[in-house]
Length: 274
Length: 274
Figure 1 (cartoon, rainbow over the protein chains, first blue to last red):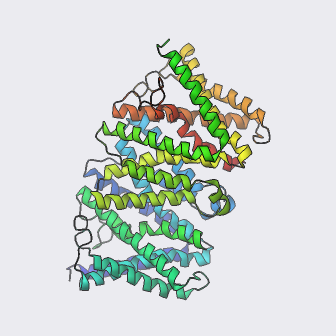
Figure 2: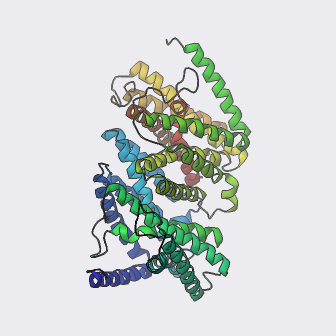
Figure 3: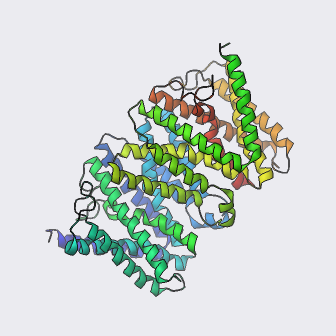
């Protein structure tokens, strides 16, 4: 048992309650929340990379993220479906970044890492706005909850399977605590959670067991890859936590890392298979 | 006069003839041509960046580009308009790149620069496939030719305006030969060329003079920004030419730099305004 367990439990309960409120309330609360996550997460990335001597252009990242969020708003996609809005936002970000470096000193690593941060953070988070109203604001709440359920179930399954059966290290140089058995447990629990969850609203998720196995496998792998990717980033920068966000839980990025890849994946699966 | 002028003229004529043939023939010739441009341009980027000690993962860049090209093919967009195909390709590239670095040594600068190269080269070139068949294969030929006309007209206008009226340096530290007067001449000639060009096919371009001024201004600025961006890249890497592609004309990227930003811009303008 860790010393800060009571603090961690209280933090987690407060965090989970806030999350449910924001998800339920829809875009009027989700948009400002995503902006806050971009602000805090962007600063965490900037400070982590600075420890390795790499510059990040935070104002450009934030401004680009704002444009991307606005261009991810569902009404734009409903009324002008022929326009690839998020690609336009990425194009504006690229043109703006090149123009900035032309004026400010041709720091190409700064450009490359700011672009990576743009695609890592706001690009992935922006799909939350689309998911929340796909196919409509009522059913969208269920769709958006899917990657969150899959990601939490993966974390829980991996924790317990790793604790009881963990033998073989998964990626010792990146994240020494993870085991192959934990990873498989995460996939299994994610599958069970998705079977239970999708049975609640059959009209949104008319899938058979084989399809659910396929979806949960992909989502659980994406969640674990997101976790490992952030661990790699921290390891590269030589930090243990990405920052201090929730007391007892490390940084914001440590909290959302396994979600970052599951949001886009869920959106792609939803538009491909429904 | 430069010594290699005859060589340059012959090369240019051969290149322009090949370009016209490829554009006219459509996707069966354009797709392999784009793959060739990705191969040669990707190797030029890799070799340029290597001079600065920066690694580029060429196999990943090429493979990601192939997937992106396939996902840019117009039939996919016609039959499944609700799927953001190019975003899916970008997502696969991101997941693949993170996975590769997790397995191969956590070289994050390599990941960031390969991502930059992906968005700089195949991401921008892939729009050629969409433009060639928007709104259909017949009229698409005219649409695709638009950014090429605007870019060539900008180059010619900038060259002559700069030569006869050039006084004030535009970006002396990046590209010492360029002047503000040349840039304005490029915009003016681009506008004149677009007025002449669009008058040829009124059913594809039913635009007034004010709209054409707006479009040609944006396209000419994008062409000049593309030129400067590639100059910045070369300056950063300490090379004069990006490689040796056409005899007497420098590297492939030196040839296509001003087109790279005009292809996506044209696509966005076409889907927004038609």
